[in-house]
Length: 133
Image (cartoon, rainbow, N blue to C red; front, side, top):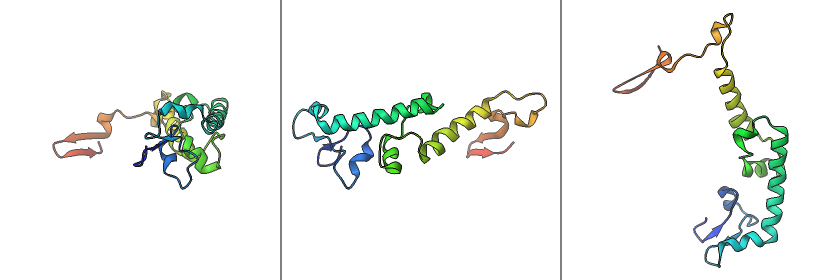
């Protein structure tokens, strides 16, 4: 919600753009749920759902993310009906691939792939965190 009472629904950062396409109403103007009946809301919902569907069909990490980067889709492509974004690749896919690799059990011949226990990689003393063995 903006200082003047304008509000948006899907992603708060959409409210602070130069245009007002993503302003669905103002808290001073009446019942908030009235915005759900507008053609603007229905059109945007349809576009966002198409992008979410696209993510669900094409991305193996959809269950981890749920098509979270709604505003990023619009910022990068000009549409909400998009799937992968740079933010998605860098923040979701890279993170979850790394976690998957780190949690994979090492084979006996690949002992270098073993993940160290936190106690082996860092220690904490009174002054804070000390990295290293």
